[in-house]
Image 1 (cartoon, rainbow, N blue to C red):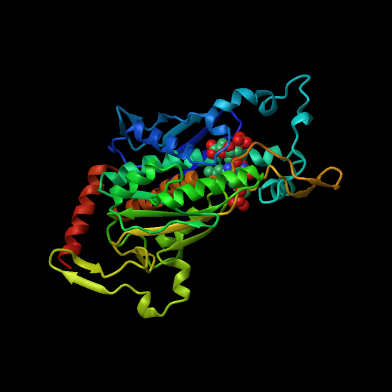
Image 2: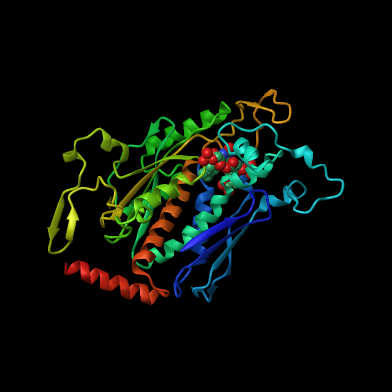
Length: 387
Ligand SMILES: Cc1cc2nc3c(=O)[nH]c(=O)nc-3n(C[C@H](O)[C@H](O)[C@H](O)COP(=O)(O)O)c2cc1C
Ligand SMILES: C=C(O[C@@H]1CC(C(=O)O)=C[C@@H](OP(=O)(O)O)[C@H]1O)C(=O)O
């Protein structure tokens, strides 16, 4: 299974095509739109999110609410397009002075300068239009389709923000449904109310100062069977695939699985998860510091992945830059921008990790239809039980 996305942040629409999705999976359109709506929320977002009301149209691959096995085509229209038609027009317009809205002072931390040099573009808008995290709308939409396959096998996905700037949450041991319910209601997607208030204050203070904030998000996936991914080839290791997907999210600079970087400080006896067995549970682990992976394969314990997001690069109190025409020092161009998008980025991460798990699920259980996958899945569970 694979997907591609296309479209500019201020263009008419965003598009995605999913190829290799099995047939006979019921697709609830509301669930796709629910995920898109979640991605737009979170304290610290800029004005753009008030303009957009992201809803996906499925324009191929689904009939009467079920997939047919054909490529699934998805479209989300940009409401903001109407304000950008002359700037973004695909055909040249007579008398339109494009240079008026040219971007020529690259923002440190964004893709502007590297992209301009690489693609030989003197209007850096031609870079920022596609590097913008607006593109993640379609990655959430594709993930929201893929997770409906996971749901059919009882696999659940949750996310929580665990740090914004220097505010860290106090961890609580919660059942996944409870975690989903509480984080859903929080404007910064946390369970810890004390941290929530401090995070909101930190975002407001950064905004006041014309500055920005990053953070850490944690994604948990429960109900995954043992043996997704494989140790036999580097690009089949599912933990590696998840890390690649996480680092592909705009502004993500780190990824941890399980206790991650903590493992460097501890002895092996405090890191590895001892193996247990019972008649009822089969093989299981006394702990889950490995975050659900050994040898690039799932252990059957919950998958725990964390992603680090750097602070947003467009600062209202702009950083030093250089004009690409005159080569003179200037402050970077200020585009309308978010102060902190960590809660939204959590939703993005959750859906792209769900995509990777769904992809590995299909690699393992194969099949062109849901029925064929279910039969392969059930026979594998039987094999595990009788091992
Ligand atoms: C949900 C989300 C919203 C973002 N909003 C902004 C923004 O408003 N302004 C900005 O400069 N960067 C924003 N970014 C980050 C940039 O897209 C990102 O820094 C840029 O594409 C350069 O890529 P890199 O940071 O991965 O190197 C956002 C990222 C995410 C995930
Ligand atoms: C549009 C989205 O996020 C955008 C991501 C983004 C960037 O530089 O990454 C810059 C901003 O774009 P604009 O200048 O149009 O407001 C954000 O709003 C979105 O998440 O849907």
